[in-house]
Image 1 (cartoon, rainbow, N blue to C red):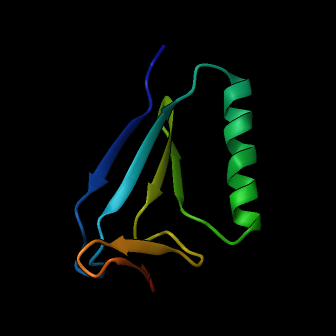
Image 2 (image 1 turned 90 degrees about the vertical axis):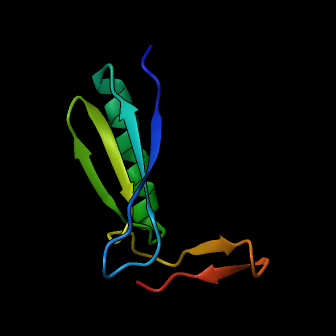
Image 3 (image 1 turned 45 degrees about the vertical axis):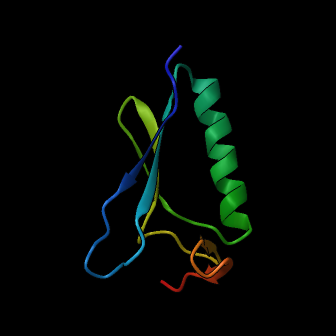
Length: 84
């Protein structure tokens, strides 16, 4: 069984926060259908992001992430709203 991979993308000039990429192996159509259901539910609550497929499903939480979201700032000890 292949494992899910997580990695951080470098920031871009327009975005000071790193992007999180999640690479999810897809062994069969049922798994892809479930991932599509999850993506649809996230969009319904206002969270959208880039997706892709190249033998596995890619989710990219980077500059393309939309919706209301926060990042925890350890130095300040609080959550900060990300405005993109």
